[in-house]
Length: 378
Image 1: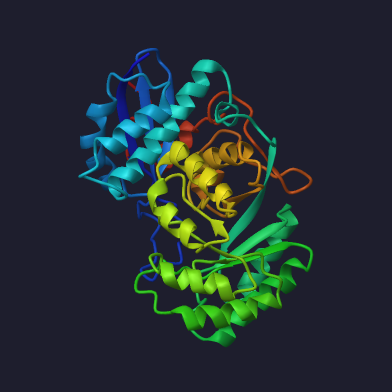
Image 2: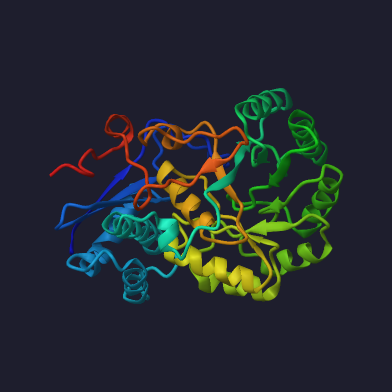
C-alpha cells in the first residue's frame, strides 16, 4: 500500500469563541482536516489545530516525504518527517501539520488491520473515558446556567477558564470559581484554566501563587496555564508552592520540549495537544515520559471530533489517563461525524470500537463547514 495524495480543508462558519484577547469569529480557520489517500482506496483522516494556509504551506515540504511511502508505518513515517524538516519547522507549523498526517496514518493502519487505534497503540486499559466539559468563563449568571445545563446532560467533570480570569480582578476570579462550584456541586471535578498562552499575558508568579491559594478552598482538581508557556522557572516555583496540582503544556510541541519541563519538575499534569504536538506517535512518547517523571498525562483537546476520537484512543491505551477534554457547544465536535458522541448514564464517553479512529465524517457537515469539499472525492 502506498500514499498517493494528501488533501486538506479548513473548517469555518461555526468556529467557537476561544477566549483569546483577539476573539475568534465564526469564519476564523483554526482547525484544519487532513485526508491521506492510498492506492488501495483507504483514506485516513487527521486534524490540525492550525490555519489551513499554514498546513498547506507545510505540505509543500512534507508531501514529497510521504507520497509513495507505506502509510501503515505511522511512527516511522512521522519520524522521517521530523528528521527531514529539522531546519524548516522544529515545533512550528511543520510539526503541527505532521500531527494531522500522523493521526491519519494511524487511522489507515487501523482500517487495514481491522483494529481500533487504541489496540494498535499497545492495548486498551479502558473502553470508556471520563470527559470534562471545557467552558469559557462568562458573567456569573451565564456561567452558572451553562454549567447547570451541562451537568443535566450528564457531565461529571468540568473546566472553566480564560474569559475574565486573571484579566479583571482577584475578586472577579474568585466569584467565577465560587459560581462554578456552587453550580455543579461538591461532588464533581472542577479545574481552572487561566489561559496564560493568551497574547501578552500579564500575570506572573506572585499573582499565580495567590490564585492557587484561593483555589484550594474550592477543591480545584488542577490549575492550568497560570503563567506564560515558556516560564519554566516560574512553573517550577509555582508547583513547589501550590497545594493545587499545576498543569500546562498545550502549546509545547515535540517530546524534546516536554523533557525540559518534566526534568525541572514544572508540572503535575502535562497537557500536549495531539493535533499540534506531533500526533499520536509523539503524544504517546510524551505520555511515557510523564509517567517516568511521576506526572499525569491529560491531552489538551480544544479541537474537532477527529481530534477527540484520537484523544479517546490515546487515553484508552495509557494506564494512568482517565480524562479527556470535551469542548462543549462546538459544531466541529458535535456535528461533523456521523452519529456523533454521546455520554452514557455515568457521564462517560465510549472509545470508538471500529477500525482506526472508528468515526466517519458526515458529508453534509463537510459541505457546510469545510472550505475545500474535495477531501474525499476524486
